[in-house]
Length: 76
Image (cartoon, rainbow, N blue to C red; front, side, top):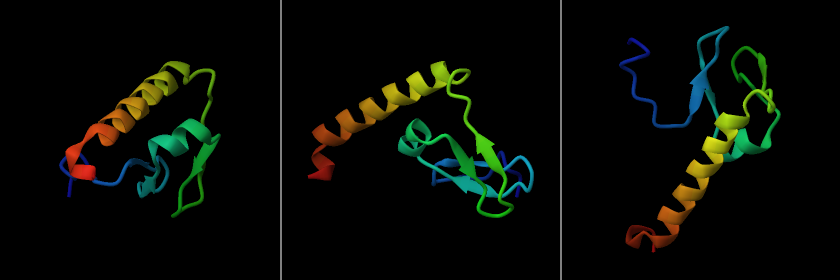
């Protein structure tokens, strides 16, 4: 199956070395220094200085998600 057509329900990214899926979460991306591929062991370092704008956008997304969950009638 083509990766573009593949529906991924779990958040994460594809490993640039082995092509396997690296699961992660917004909370993990905001708090960790890097990710490890569970298949090949590649360590992806997060350069927090160069990623500042992306990390700020993730923080906004995380806050919005928490607001929606706290006010949703479906989660009660």
